[in-house]
Length: 276
Figure 1 (tube, helix red, strand yellow):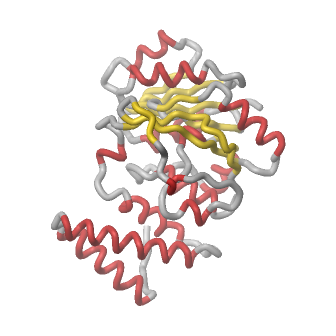
Figure 2 (figure 1 turned 180 degrees about the vertical axis):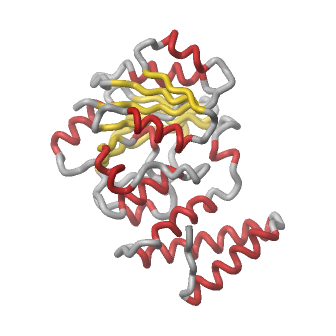
């Protein structure tokens, strides 16, 4: 199996080297590695001196979705693995997933379990991030259980459901996995084959308040087409509207208070208007 690896990065030269070291230590080496520099102002361009075998692309800062999409566009393989530049892979990660897909040829996406390191210390992963395989749309509704660094997928899925949404600053992975899980089975390699590092102040999940604001946008998009899951989506939307209203009230965000009160009102009346 030939695999393209797509790594978006922004001002993370030091940890990018760590990530790439884990890629080139794979027992199933990728066919190509594409690093997308999303407008870094640090020494990231020097990565070509450290790893001359990579393909390096520079773009003006446009966000992680645009960076991943540029990598997808330039990837020559049918299979694409994503790796965030602050994460690392276990050396058998690609080998395990390639073996899974050889045995399950009709499944076009898989992901793995993960370990978490926060401020240099391994922490226990909360139960809500338990992993599931197969028809997992419902398990993906509340929050994102699939780390991008664990995902391996076939380009046919992206051709069918679209790429990462460049209008979402965060939760772009949650959005794409939902669009895939709505129609396709997703395989699970139930082993901790990636390490996710956290605790840095530049991480997107730290920079943005109310992450459910972005999940709401992803869920609202799903309602634009008929699906057997629409009732579940509407139920989850109402839960998130209520939570966001509580947050807006707590921090006296007047515009958001009015927005979520209106959404709750129209949602309960069954007249929720979604337009994009």
